[in-house]
Image (cartoon, rainbow, N blue to C red; front, side, top):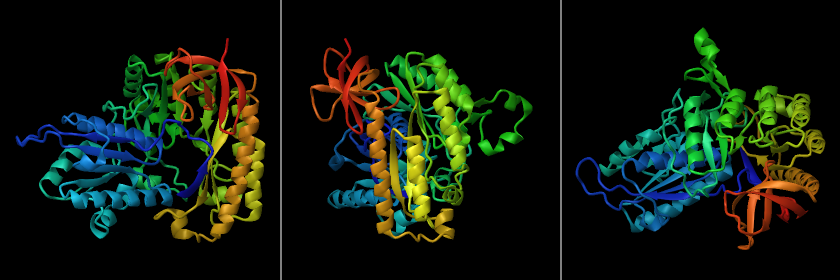
Length: 488
């Protein structure tokens, strides 16, 4: 989709490239498989990290265990992202490095999971010969069989896309978890067909998960003393359960199925009531799909965080139409105004692409003026790069010079930094409820956590522990962090 050169703040401070290794003790043919090890590395969006937890769960049922040492791995899996060219190049470099290890250990097998796997299966397997196994986002249940294919000396491939939510009954293994926050996937795929985005081609059409399985997973996390959940999907606002199947087929459903259907606002209410002691977040939203009923659900329940990630991508209605975003500048402003009316203290973040085909200086200035009007708390800013098979790649010329893209991106970054600092200064002297997530990266003597608005807060350690809710008085700030001390 786009190439990132910066982000002001991570959606989840704990998100990182995770690793897990799995070992199989014995397979069905009686051959001893003890101490076989599998190493999994994840890239890209939160959905990929959640999917890696599903992979670990599926493999654990065959007796797999974990390690973080790739050098001793018998099987290496990379869970990949296709959303930006930079992400793909990073994965290719990692695959090249792993193949160097493989030359010294010929028995090692290498596979790719996820979006890049589905899109580039032939090139990765046969042309570049970087991998032995390719597994698409809907094929993880088949992993034990695919591993057997490798054991028998054959390459293994399954990239078939499903019309159902395929992992609703899988209890994820929480990889690298801080024991405080966890992801819960509620939808897969996307129907929006933005002209720059490859996701509909790699993850398929929208389908939602049975709400009862979502509630069961949330209750299980609560019983395990997790304190925060993030409901995940490429477009969570499009959540719609009517008994299973693609969202686009909802109109064909029976009257009974329609009458008992559950949308996203209703799901939020159900989760909030089921686990009242847990914080609830969600990501990612699309403006054209967010209704006021969702905003009222957030305002109604104290445990639903007052924070919305609301990608806009451009401030120009002309460019938004070319992007096939489904909203224009005025409609986006109207939604922002309703958010600020219904949830006055709501934190709002964005995604922004600069340098989209035909973007003019006037379009760029409209993006800057939109940012000045909204004053986002933080954002994820990129310059455009073509993604294969998208409408923009097939029908539009990538006609904005790289130096212009970078200059415009810098303008956007500078404005966001200004707004982030302005918004953080509004918290000075106030008391914030902070959920402790762990030790600060900069000091072993300090905790870090997040406020309901998703702002990182750092304060000196006391007798608290990760998972505690603490009242913190904010004393100073940076563009990305609030700094304070425990309120007396």
